[in-house]
Amino acid sequence: MRELYLIRHGESLANLERRFDATPPGAPLSARGEEQAQRCAQWLASRGVSPSVVYASPFRRTVETATPFAAQSSARLVTHEALREVRVGAWDGIRSQALREDESYLRWRDQPEIAPPGGESLEEVWLRLQACLRDLCAQAPPGEALVLFTHQHPLRAALWHLGALRDEGGGLVPVPNTAILHLQGDLDALHIVGLDRSIDAATGGAQRAAI
Image (cartoon, rainbow, N blue to C red; front, side, top):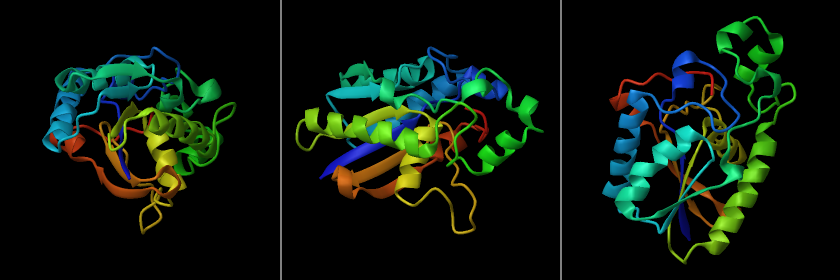
C-alpha cells in the first residue's frame, strides 16, 4: 500500500490576474504563494513525509512550490510533463473576465468534465496522470510516499475518477491553491484519505476560477 500526495501549486501571479496560464514555464508564485509553499513543506514534514524524490510539473509555479519541501527533505526535485495543467486551447493567456459571456466557458466552469475548445477533458487529464502514477509507483522504493506538485485540474481529474468531484449538493469540491489530496492504496484501488485546504485558508487566499 502506498501513500500519494497530489498538491496544487501556491498562488501565482496569473492566479491574481485570473488569467489562464497553461503553457510552461508560466507565471511565478506571488508573495502569498511563496508563503504557501513554505507552509506546505511544514505540513508534509509534520506528518513524517520524507521521500527521496519530489515530482513537479514543468511550470515555474509548481517547481517554486515544491522547492522548499524538496530542500528540507534533501530530496531530488524532478519535473514530469504528465503533471502539467489542463490544456485550455484558445483560452490560454486570456483573463476569465473576458470570457464571462462565452457560453462554452460558462459551461466548462460548471462542468469541468467536458473539454474547453481545443483543450483537454478531465478524462484525458486523468489518463495521462494515471500513466504517470503507474510509472512512478513502479520506480519508487516499496513503502515510500509519492509527492507530486501539480495543478488544479489534475487534482480535479483524480477526484472525478474517484467519484468525489462534487459535494452532496452537486457543487464542485473546492481545490484552492496548495490544496493537498492525500490518497492511499494500490493504483487500481485508491481511496481518498483527505483533501486538505487549510494552507489557503490560513494565508487568506482566494479560490480563484482561472488556472
